[in-house]
Image (tube, rainbow, N blue to C red; front, side):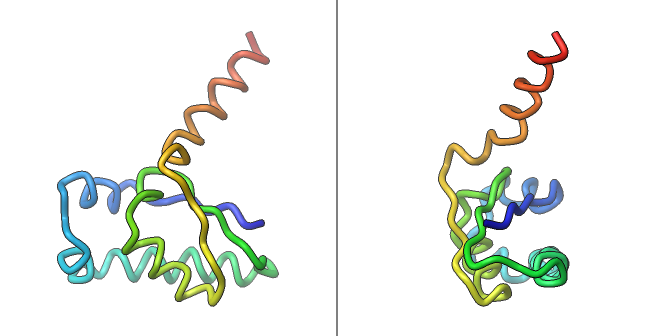
Length: 95
């Protein structure tokens, strides 16, 4: 399973409530999708990918990423908090 992180500038666009049509106008979406796909595919890829971070519940971005990877991208609303949960676990271990 691949692990994909979304980028802050797209999260800001998404937080502003941009529709899928409006997001399509931003070259940033295609740019980030292309960079992530290149990294994933360059590392051998995976049959299934899971998107975390602020864009995990944005169907437009998830769909574009799946299209670029040529394989499914799974996610869930709670995946938005994966980084924070991981940081909390590390902090607890370092305690």
